[in-house]
Length: 213
Ligand SMILES: N[C@@H](CCC(=O)N[C@@H](CS)C(=O)NCC(=O)O)C(=O)O
Image 1 (cartoon, protein in one colour):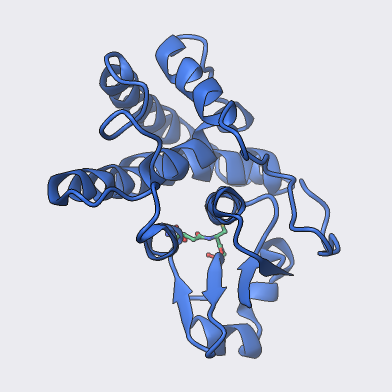
Image 2: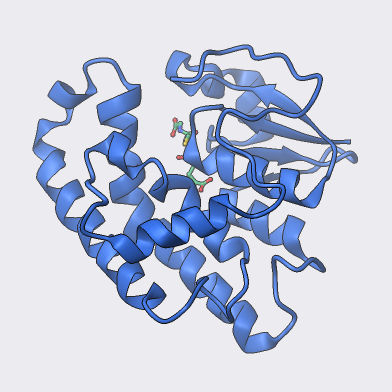
């Protein structure tokens, strides 16, 4: 069975849980609490030398890190990744956008302002930059979605899942989504899909080892 090393409150890990749930794939969830350093133990560093979650462990003992690489691997041959060459490249385009222009501001703001105790004081000097870059990313999304229901070819793909994960909790990082009605309508569309699960969801039988922040 697949194993997902994951932190429940992490948007990057939620992306993978959401896709696994949508695909109906059974998997074992292994909690790794980054906030208490469980990702830096020698045992975990053997599995992923970068010391980060999410990390997918295959039945044969191989490991795959990077949330969007994991989405790409799991989505192959499913409706979440188109077969058309250009459409696949567009899916990658939005997943690179997510990692380069969106996640470093929107996820970082939520991590430090919501999840890390005292994080607001520790990272005061970063807040203006996060706000500027995060709002710029939201404006790009607002413009792109103005004439489309989803990011690529009118159907929900892993590009939507990658961008949904941090956007739907952007307000926890001080981003006001009120000026982005198109993005909010898209969030509702993604969440309204049959089989959608929220960030607190866990596969049946997995015990919650850490609290959801
Ligand atoms: N680009 C990576 C980012 C992964 C990442 O930053 N994970 C965080 C949790 S959301 C983590 O493990 N942080 C611990 C650390 O960097 O020490 C991905 O998309 O998977």
